[in-house]
Length: 252
Ligand SMILES: NC(=O)c1ccc[n+]([C@@H]2O[C@H](COP(=O)([O-])OP(=O)(O)OC[C@H]3O[C@@H](n4cnc5c(N)ncnc54)[C@H](O)[C@@H]3O)[C@@H](O)[C@H]2O)c1
Image 1 (spheres, protein in one colour):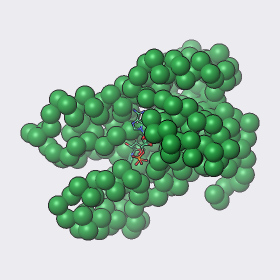
Image 2 (image 1 turned 45 degrees about the vertical axis):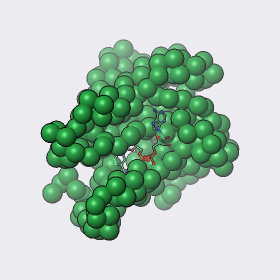
Image 3 (image 1 turned 90 degrees about the horizontal axis):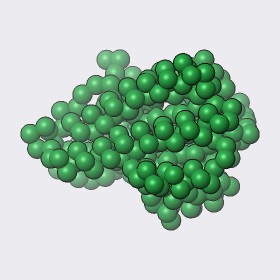
């Protein structure tokens, strides 16, 4: 990472969905930059492996389950950074094909999961010195995609939930900032699964790679760098913002 060391030294950070892809890169980056990291995920084996590799600890957590949040937070007395990153992809299919089963499945994790995370984060951070809550949205929370109606709805919800939380915490003087991050296609297992399911995987991979003006797909580390900025005190006056990490796609 280019911009200095120990940018989050002494901070305690919890990363949901930290077992894979973007969450794993975020956990690694925050640990590398001095934070004590809690990797939280439903994928226990992979999550434990990431936690072990970075010298952090693992917490089993299904973000869509309020009781699981209560249990996870009971073991944490201090939290400076919460990254609500866990998410699932949509089934693919237009509004004419999408069913309520897809809505319930995706919204449970991407919508309710971030809502519960924000509630849990505010509750613990306001007892301490405040903190930074970072919610993973997507460019699909900024612009529509015809075959991802439910995913777009879930990521749009994250965008405005974030602003509401930011304004509430500012008004209360809690010292808690809340921002959203909006990656474009990023080379992770989630995108691999989307490509594998496509009728012409090679064509889709080429299309996703060429979609960004910067001429490549995003890397998990690109998103982790943006999260590091929002987690660090460099962003002390930044709240309610939407940080787009897309190689220029939504500027077209
Ligand atoms: N990869 C992309 O192109 C892309 C683009 C924009 C936004 N995002 C968002 O970034 C985030 C991470 O995506 P990724 O590509 O790294 O996906 P991924 O599938 O590689 O990782 C997602 C992680 O979330 C965990 N998870 C899923 N449901 C969970 C639950 N209920 N509770 C706790 N953990 C759960 C999974 O076990 C997994 O470890 C997601 O919110 C996704 O929507 C991804």
